[in-house]
Amino acid sequence: MLAVIGGSGLVGLGQMKVTRREIARTPFGEPSGPLIFGQMNNAPVLFLARHGPGHVLAPHRVNYRANVWALRQAGATDILAVAAVGGIAENTGPGVIAVPDQIIDYTYGREHTFCDGSDRTVVHIDFTKPYSDELRDAIVAAAALASVSIVATGVYGATQGPRLETAAEITRMARDGATLVGMTGMPEAALARELSLRYAHLCVTSNWAAGCGNSVNAISHAAIDNTLDQSIGRVQEIIAALAGTFKVGS
Ligand code: HPA
Image 1 (cartoon, protein in one colour):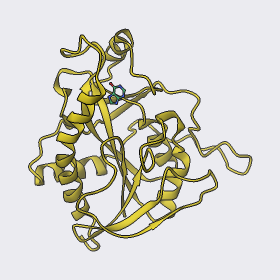
Image 2 (cartoon, rainbow, N blue to C red):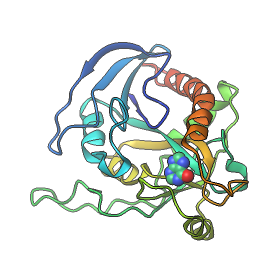
Image 3 (cartoon, rainbow, N blue to C red):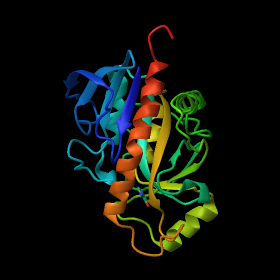
Image 4 (tube, rainbow, N blue to C red):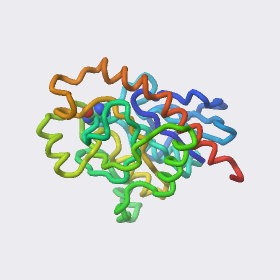
């Protein structure tokens, strides 16, 4: 079953017929909000708002372990993680939708593994390719089906937040090879891998990252929200097309 984790700007799935909501409990506490079960394009779909109902949880306060655990517990096999990002590379300006293929993790102090209890053996997951190629290919195909143009590669740099970056930090990240910057991609992706779930990112650029493009001035929240509002319809279309490929028997 396909699960969608919605980030900033995506608090629900427009085309989803909701059948039930469930407050899940996990050994790691409660997820950000209720799990929303439903159907989309005749396929079962599960939705979770990463920042909780009302967007109350800052990126470093999200209980990533509970979220990923709860989705698997509910039967998810694949996680499509939607995330707002800042654009660093020239081809990632505001409004661009990207499916990155690599991650650099700059976060710290987050509960980033399921392997820290005495009752759990340590697993050194292979993370050479942090995203599932299979799911990425399915997203790229779904975007083509929905006639939505996307950038099909990229390097997602995960920062701690909640503040935005300095221009010098972004210059360093660009030197490292990051093309996108966001605050929630890690440890989410690694936790999904620990549980053998397919995971991929659908990133929506809401602004040029600090000092990039023509963003010599402060990055305004109004501009971020406005760009997300304008882009989220295209994201929903990709998700609906992707859900169709999860029909039982397809
Ligand atoms: N930096 C980090 N995270 C973000 C940004 C940004 O510029 N925009 C949206 N999420």
